[in-house]
Amino acid sequence: MLYRLMKYVLIGPLLRLLWPTKVVGAENIPATGGAILAGNHLAVADSFFMPIRVKRMVTFPAKSEYFTEKGIKGTLKKWFFTGVGQFPIDRSGGNAAQAALNTATRLVKEGRLLGIYPEGTRSPDGRLYKGKTGVARITLDSGGVVIPVAMIGTEKVNPIGSKMWWPRRLEIRFGKPLDFSRYEGLSGDRFIERSITDEIMYALMELSGQEYVDIYAAKAKELIAAEQSGVRPAVPAQASAREADRVPGTKVG
Image 1: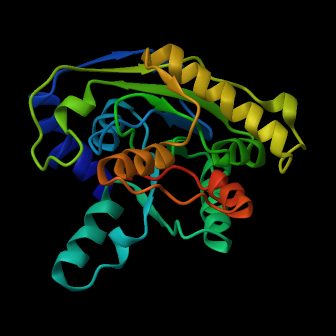
Image 2: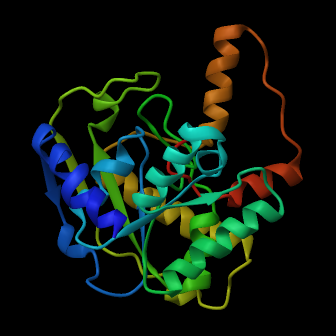
């Protein structure tokens, strides 16, 4: 009920009015059944503009801090993010990462549309970065198809670091569904999961026209920050890197 109120009464009409958006390929979204909308991630605005152009409800994972803040502000945040269809995930790794994967998988099995950003965080420079394999694990465990989604122009509406949203014309491109049922029963195979993830990222690259960079966006942010500060970033332990590879992309990063 709250989701529909946000989408059709409080937020959706305003976004449609102020930000004209060309939508291509909406017919690729299945009318029923579980599916994964895997998108590039250029701005916080992505998670607002895409769902209002999809007839069905889209649920995104969002970092748990949005649901745990204290006080009136925290209560309002929790109410808002719950209302727009988000569910909290703890990105600290280990069991928390697996819990996030389990929740996402359950939602797809229940026939829901799951929105996810395989890059795991926003692109720091508009390029497309290496995908984390959490999206592949969810796909294999749920049996849902993957629809690549390319957001075009949202980084100009809501640039990183900006609190303002600027008027721009946008475009959203929904690609053909990717069916990975040929890998049924191979969940947990790191090489299969990487292959699936790379196929999704290739589809996103073609759909969005972005330049692809074969490192994680989080590492790119570290390198950019290190270059600006003159401090060399630490190299993560191999085990930590493997665990981080599976954490699914959150709504905002």
